[in-house]
Each structure stands twice: as C-alpha cells, then as structure tokens.
Image (cartoon, rainbow, N blue to C red):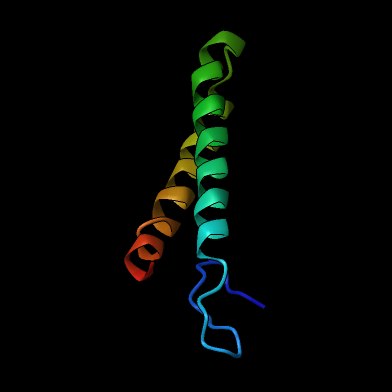
Length: 69
C-alpha cells in the first residue's frame, strides 16, 4: 500500500502513487479555493477558516512529491 506522499516502492522497485498523490492534493486545493472564494457570497467567516486550513494542508503535502518524481 502506498503512503500518502507516494514515497513507498512496490516490490519490483517501481514508484507508486505519485501521480495520484498530486491529483489528490490538487483536488484538496481546488476545494479550499472554492470555499474561500464563495465565503463572501455566503457571508460566512467559517468558510474562510476552513478554506485556509485546507490550503495549508495542500501546500504542506505538495512540495515533496514533485521532487521525488
């Protein structure tokens, strides 16, 4: 089973899950951006907080993956 960052290897030495990890990080980042963007329309400060939290998670998980790719 692959780690969330895609750093583990399959038995044969092939790299696994890096592309899926990048796509998952992109989905989290797009969701966070939409929450932050629609917070003004919904007049909800909590949406900004949740969006910023998700953006921080996505930003923290993305940089190691392309370096290993």
